[in-house]
Structures are given as structure tokens and as C-alpha cells.
Length: 598
Figure (spheres, rainbow, N blue to C red):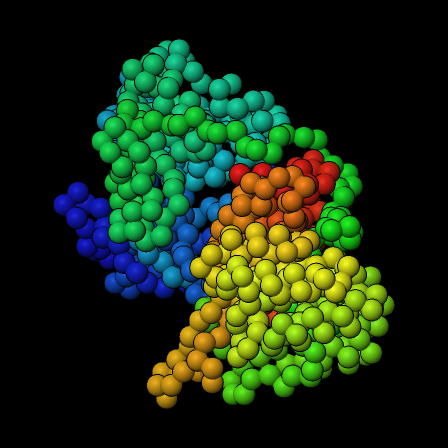
């Protein structure tokens, strides 16, 4: 096998499919199951033997994630059919979890080898005058261990620093190995500072220092190496999309300008690097909280937690009751209700898109009188707060519907002036300040119930519309209803939906929805304190961290829609995840982190 290389002998990358030969958790890594070892074999002319310091972009063929993940090479060796490359992967997020969940014979898209390499030291005969120091921190042990393995035995000293436990050291043969752990579970108790400083580097006579690990550790190694007057090479990491130098998303500031971590690195001369002082987090360190309070009170109504089944995506609550315990939810917003029974739109009604769903249901519903007689009693029998989502085709039908709901025990009315899938009413009322103000004021005049107003993200003056609703008597603002989109059937050349435009929701809209909530919170905070109202966030929520993100942007409650179709247990998983997060962070109530991102 003779791979094509550049003039420096570094193999050109290829994009190919590899076969998983091993995927297992790494012994010694703490907590158990936090680090995985994955072996991937590539064969034929696309097999590439990496040079120490390089990395690959890895993505499971079955992945639900858009981007591959950059993973450093831990070990590589030739096989009878090609190259088997070993990676150590820290279980960190969705992308790495997919990789860690792989099994033997699974297929992986693999791009690489990528990046530059560790410059080899001038080492001969194990002379201490040319011996080098190699330092790895946490998962950063992987690339430097791969580099150490390529050096002659006992021509280097190796320091491995972990929070707890140790791993990734089985292939190295240093003259001296020092392991440090924050908790003292292995080796020296303490951080890397307990093992090395400038004086020790000078005394050992190292010719160079090589390191990879978390930024604070690298900053320290850079400082002590340069203080000792010793050449230092640091392997850096950054978020990246392409791995080949195109996207410019992984640039690192240096004295030579912004350099690409994937193409100009990941190995850099420490002298051109600077490490900005990290900003402190906005959540203070606290002891874990035994029993956090997830309850939220909005407009005088108490919700046991912030999760609400969104209108149009959760029926009346009873539909999902056989599937999971809906009584664990904070609230349930009814299907959009109109004064008269409504049949909804003709033609195709739903259309799947990447990370989202388009719909053109058209507010099909049994009508408010039927709801009051049949569905509302069943909703009220459930533990979550029942919310009646009120829509209409005219000002008069909104008012008459509100009058009927006022006579019931339903705790909250959510005024829907945002539905994009009806010919009259709906979003038409939410597009301008005057129309929004008039319908809110008219409904406010006939009901004393807490009144939430659900707005459309399509309004060109959204902040002003929200303020006009508050002025007219809204007790809270729900944002945002689905976005408008168009889908075209490429087989027929015609729009998918009879009404051309349709509502678009799902995980794909979440960053936009977070931005709208963030801006709305700032708008509301500019009001006098007695005029401020809560925010109910809607838009692409699929995980507990999505909920927390919306809360930090300024939301009090959240509504979950499309994700329930993909995973009916979404809201329960969010509740459990929020509770675990609050316990871990020592957060007693969600109000402590509401709006904290501002």
C-alpha cells in the first residue's frame, strides 16, 4: 500500500466508508462509560496511514446529525486489507454519542487523515539532552499518546493528567510516566501543575514539549515551556464543519492572524498562540440541590413544571394518555378551537422536511360548544393545567368563543392570532399592532381568565405587536407559532399544499425561535415592572437542554409540538433532564436562571 502524499510525505485525505471492528468503553476512564475506544478499518486504495498528530472527520452512516465530528488518531496499523485506525472518543454530545453507540460491522463515513503533524524531535540514542516531554490532559491524551508511540523507547517523559482515573497509556514507553488526577484516584493528587513547572523543564533538559488537552492546561504548558526557553508544540481543537480548510469556522487567533485549526493546525507553535482569559459562567458554583422545585406560576396559575403539550400537536391530552403518563406534564394546550366546527384544509396536510415538519391542517376542530361538552371535562380530569386555544375567523367569532369559554372552569385561554393555515382570521390578526390590539382588547373585555396571546413570527413588527397585546390586556405572550414555508413536489412540479404556503416547525426552527424569545424578553424588560408579562416559548424543543436554553433566553414556560410526533416521551425526558440539571447545578427554582443570558 503506497498512499499518495504531499511533498512533506503527509498523505492526502480521502472520503470513504470504514468498517467498525471494535467499539467499547475504555477501562480506567471515570465515570464509567465516559470514554470509548473505536477501531475503524479502511481498505483498498482509499486506506490511509495517518501521521501522528492528524485527525479524521467521523460520521456514522446512520447518523441523524448534519456534521461529522473531528476525532484525533490514537493508534493506527496496517492490516492485510488496509489500515485499522483507533480513536478514543469522549462521550460529550449527540454526535459523539452516535459514534459511541456503534457496533462491530457498522459503517462510518470517514474523511482524512487531516491536519498537520507533530514535528519530530531530533532524538538519538536516548540522550537526555535531546529528550522531550509529552503532556496529555483528559481526552487530549489520545493524539499525544499516538505521537509518543512513534518515538524510540525512553526518549521522552510523559505526563497524563485526568480528573479521575486514567486511560490511553497502554502503547507508550516513556522513560518516566507521571499520572495526576484531581481526586487522587490514580498517581499524584492534583492537576498538571503538580507534576511540571518551568524549573523542572529546565532541570530535565528537554529539547521540546508537546501537549494536547483542555485550554487552561495548554495555556499553563505554553507559559512554563516558554519561561524555560524550550520549544513547545500544542495540539488545539475547535468546532469545525469541513475539516479541509473551507468553512473557516475553526479559526484560532494567533500572532500571524486567524489560522485554521483543521488545515494550518491542529499542531501550532506555542509562541504564536494566546489564550484569552475565560469569562466566568453566569451560574455560580453551588452544592448539588437534593430536590429542586420545577414549578412555575404564570398569571396566577401554578404549573408543576414548565412543559406544556403544544396546541395542534397534543390534541386534548387524552390521545396520548394510553402511551405515557400525561399527568406529569405542566400543562396541555387544546387543539385550536373555533366557534363553529371546522373541517380544515383539503389535500396533503403534512410534509416532512430535514429536521422539521410542514403542516396545513387548517384548524380542523369540533367547535367550542362540542369542546365544552365533550373534550374539556376530560382535560379537566387530568392533572396538567388545561389551556383552551381560541381561534376565529373574525373579531365577532373570537369574542363569542371567549364568552362561551368564560363560563367554563378552564383555567387559561390562549388567544391564537397566529395560525398560518387559514384563509381568514388567525395570523391575519397578529400581523399588525392595530389588528392585534383590537382582538385582544375585545376578548379581554368578555373574560376575566388569564389570557395568553399566541403570536406569529411572520409579523414584520413583532415586538410592537407584542407590546400592543400587552397594552390591550394580555397576561402572557406565547411565541412563536409555526413559520411559513413552501414545498414543491419535484415529480409533478406543483406545490405540495393546496394553499401553497404551510406552517413549518420542528428542531430546525429552534435557533430562530430562541432569537425571537431573546428579543421579546428584552422588549418586555424595557417596560415598567408592573407592565411586564411572562413568555411562553414555542419552537423546535426536543431535549431538556433546549428547554433550559429558552428559559435562559427569558421564557417562563415552553410548549412542545413536533418533537412529540418523533418521540412521544420527549416531554417526560425533558422533565427528568431539567430536574437532573438543576440538581447538578444546585439550582432551586427555574426563576434563578430565567433570562440569565442577557
